Length: 329
Image 1: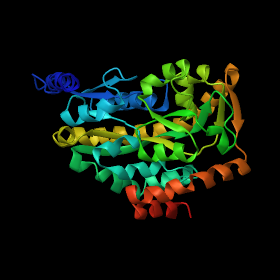
Image 2: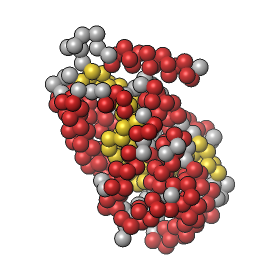
Image 3: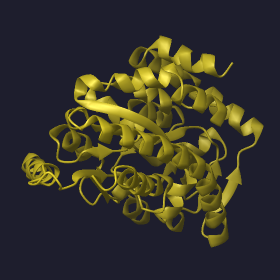
Image 4: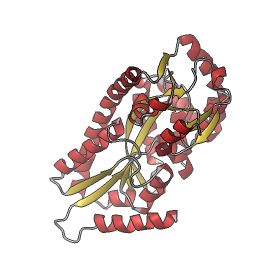
């Protein structure tokens, strides 16, 4: 059933992307799973605006937010089949494709601040990771920030012991699974679009997100407590179907690269602003009590989570972890 849906999408995508007349625009279907008023949602719309302007409407970008076309687990397969041309999945999503190295971004506390993050994503480490996608029929174009994550639940999460036995929603990631287990929680893999209802009904007790995701998805309405821990980072890789990208006229591709560079700068600029606003919005709602982690509390979490870094060295590569750590020195 799933494959037939994707194949139907592939046929539709081919019909839309292969113009009957030379004057018809090249269609890029850009699918993502978050709301339009998130950093990623706004950046996707900015790319659409710039791409159409710089190509003089030779390209038409159709943006499909909020899992309108595909859920988390479906979208990468849809891209590889050509049913959509562009995605911006979270970095944890590439593990099932066999590119486990991206999971290094999920390792707790490996990116201590935005300066180190930018050194990784804008430098050779980030570029080498994107290049690993080419063998999968995927071209990596850019990294877009969402932000650093906070923990939420229906009880205060201050000490490590507070996580004991909690069912915590995670993305499909071996690193995030190990993270929650190290804290004493029970990780529950779940599609992003299903999280609000799961929190509301008690299927899961809590989750982790940048504030912008928590606020725009209204998760704060069904979570009584949140801890600003900045323990992990959530970012995206903007990717395209490689055959589609390589088949574009050179001038069109150059203009799209310009649009992507500018929308990336925009995405990373607004991500921090949006998370600050979202955290203020959560506080103002009065529905979620916010706790800002102290240095002593962070030290306890880091000690509990250090084994995750050591355990994942065999999965993502010890050399890669060391390359991340080198950027923090």
